Image 1 (cartoon, rainbow, N blue to C red):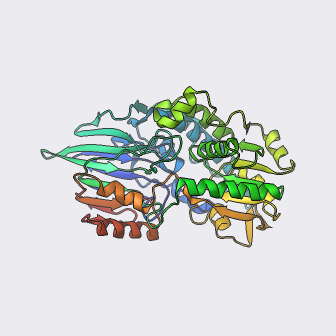
Image 2: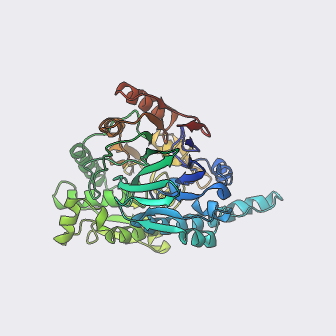
Length: 463
């Protein structure tokens, strides 16, 4: 058995790992690379796996850096099935269609520039028809149900607690008369977070493939972050400012709305208008309501009491472009939550352009910002940031709340691995910057694990 790791290696985006069991090739996720526009376009046009050589695909969760290249895979010849949980299938449908839409608009903009230079136009990486074909290949599977997906390969989806439908994959691979259990974390969530169930704790693994986004960092407690958020909102509200929150439409947006609603209801934060300006987030929130099997007991209890946990009575969900534009002229105080989470596309760019030059306003960062993204430049407090080809002075206050991250931190990742009754004989650290992955590898070794590997992109590991 062997594993070839691709893209999300010493890097946090574009997961495409190929597990070969005997003659069966299993693709673990197939995500888009996200970063600089030109580099992302080049890398996303070059799949690092042969689509015709993949026998079956398994998707840990719907985030685009894990799912976004599936239509490319299908467009280029993949004819097999794609296994995922029910909620992941529903979310992937809206996320992949949204990605195709963004690509169509981006390529139109790029081709205008190419025409002026006398260059031939480019085609989008994939289109709606490719998404349709991809969605037709999905097979929805219940949590905790061992499912044969190929000869000698059985997968069990366990709740990862990262986003709705997210999974830890337990793969039982039979080769040469013996069974090896491979555990792939996907993106591992955190315990004691609102809305979703805690991550499942496996009892055993022969091989562990673990993410490492926060492999050298620890998150604060939920109580601390709620107090910090309440103080932050109060301070900006006193200045009559606006808070712009770039947030992923799936997971992060719903979690922030839930906590803000709870703080305002308890009188710990001022009741100021909250706008969710993302058609995708609106559709994703509707999907959340359809999947109570993913919720923790607190969330289900609130639903049973009709307690409006996602704040529909308090929050204004914006769909129309005209309504989105009006937000830029409305006076503060207000909170505007908008995609994308790394500030690389979408309506949040317009809101940032219209707010960051004024000191009374603030930008609240609630998730990991990859290198070379606008979000990372905002986190680093660059004096000027480029939006739509123009530079704007960054005068607004910037506040980072890593505690809102849906990724496990160093201590939680180490605990996940070390609490197994039969710990892994081999551990492969992926999905993190070099600094974070190497640090986690060191921490796992210090915890007692042997044979911990931090591979390089494209490396093949034999088991």
